[in-house]
Image (tube, rainbow, N blue to C red; front, side, top):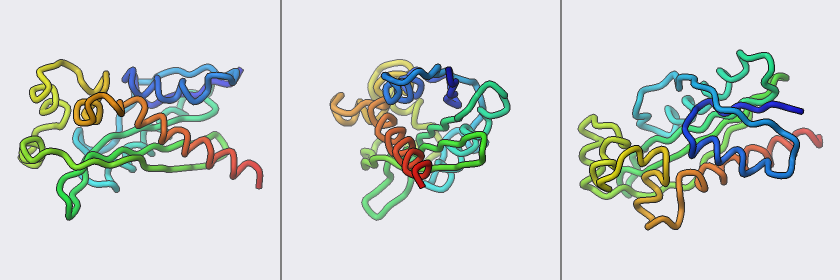
Length: 171
């Protein structure tokens, strides 16, 4: 049985990867690894770098065939500060795949606090009057009235990663 790792112990991220491999004989584990970027990634580039670092860090364990890194962040756009998310897949042969998912504009009352240096997770917990929103539906879950959750948003990214990986293997 192959073992794949998610570079996080966040239940929303692990659930996203597990949901993509429901029929495969794959063991999915979470690993506590750092992102190698700031606690609040503040651009697409920094968020992607965090995902890459998490995926590569999984491969320090020799039992892992594929590492997944999933990272959420924010990025400035003409429309305003947007929630962004990136994923990376890295295998033992050096194959590296990246993908990004949906983006939504954050409300100004949230954006202003994030721009002032407060981590989005802390801001959204106060905004939603909940604890550990990032481990549940996430900011996207709060701001889409539960229609899109953090896990489902990351699941889409994982589907993009795995689909590209399968396509490259066919070549």
